[in-house]
Image 1 (cartoon, rainbow, N blue to C red):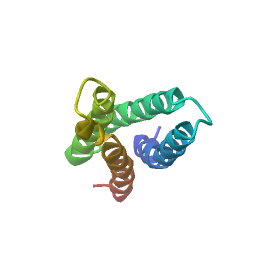
Image 2: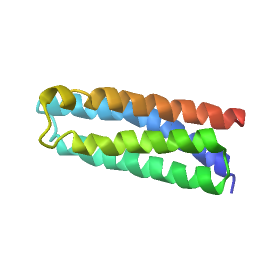
Image 3: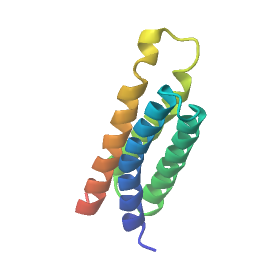
Image 4: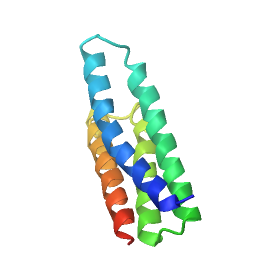
Length: 116
């Protein structure tokens, strides 16, 4: 199995799935679907990033890729805590983190494709 190719595919998947997340929360905002679909979809993205971390470690893709994969996973995991009793201004960081995770996924896929 080529760990690098699977890692690249998952990185692209994280990026594109971020757009699905935006569509889901938009649809939920206008009442077309329950907002829980956005949350469940975020769990799928978490699973994808966890698989990316495992592949980066097993495939020995390098410290920078491993570190940035951990960063993306931590940023995504932090999303769940933004629903707790925190000020609204802090909750407003949710989309910023989400977009950050999307572009980290894309960047990780590009770095892995370059072999660095």
